[in-house]
Length: 333
Image (cartoon, rainbow, N blue to C red; front, side, top):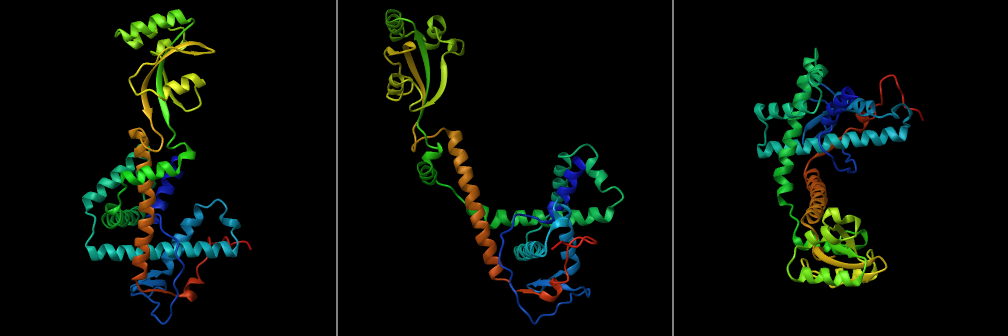
């Protein structure tokens, strides 16, 4: 349902970005009450993560889990660890953004909200917050934080990621068995029932007549209407005699008459892809995009780990133990 999709979008924004899972850091001997007098589950460089904020996010997480009522104690502990790590990651990143002076103007925020609205039915997004102004203000500020973090990552992580042609070639060679670098040839053909006719057609072609035009005129192949473009073939797919000839010719070249059980063929090589050396531009870009995503994920994890290592993170285990599952729905053991 669209309303459910909207609801999930709002909750997903609360989690910001995909974060790495780190072991919780424990420490003691700090002040666990924030300036407002609220209990803090943890502090990051002196900035508190309040018990109320923690519980609110736990509730949101659980509301999106179909099996939430059946979670046992161990599963709830793991969920708490995930939520706490999300908070810690957010805090260290927000602190970093503050140091770098990264911000989001009201104009930028308005543009992002308009982009989100376009993804949903007319007036559907506005209906979600109708009569809930305070919820909308909260959501909007959470979105502002998300955009700040996107800017931060774009500035500190992604610009340093490059994928070279050598890396693409290495990937292609190492994944040859997956078909990434399989050598292929794209051909056109003229198929004739006897050798005498085939020889006569070959002479016409050698005299400069257009291959596609002649194919439409004389070929007995059912593919004649397609100008004899048979598409790409990997080695070993075509009849042996055709396979050998097709992979020996350069693009644009026309073969001699080739006999197979199907008749007498004359083929023209339209395009070749050499395994481990040359892929189509589209295929190479797919590999480049894949390698870039993998590099970005690794770089993000390492960068976030450095931020966490440089931060003073203190966790109040006694307050953390007060956190729980859904209200009025205790977890089953």
